[in-house]
Image (cartoon, rainbow, N blue to C red; front, side, top):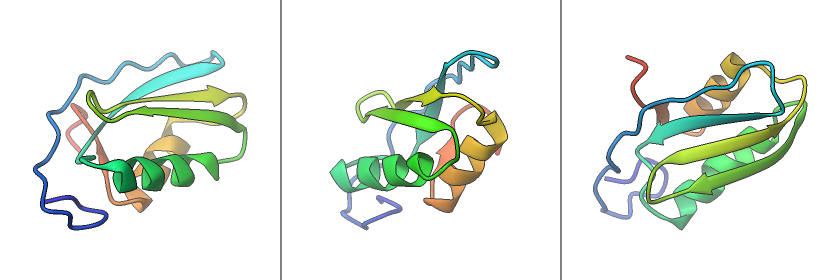
Length: 92
């Protein structure tokens, strides 16, 4: 079931996390997103992190690309979890 809107769709398959620390772009794999509302929730939560200038969410793969400077991976993880989702493949 969709964690954000309870639309009744199943969980998306997890994707391996790939993070490029120290660069202007990081890619995270988020599990549990199943619809447009999920994408909006994750995008909005990450967009509020200081230093984030762009968020691109690929619903079909769960890949979330975050651009900007000055943010940490932990800040992005916290924002994703506040939105009701988890990073895939991290044991969290």
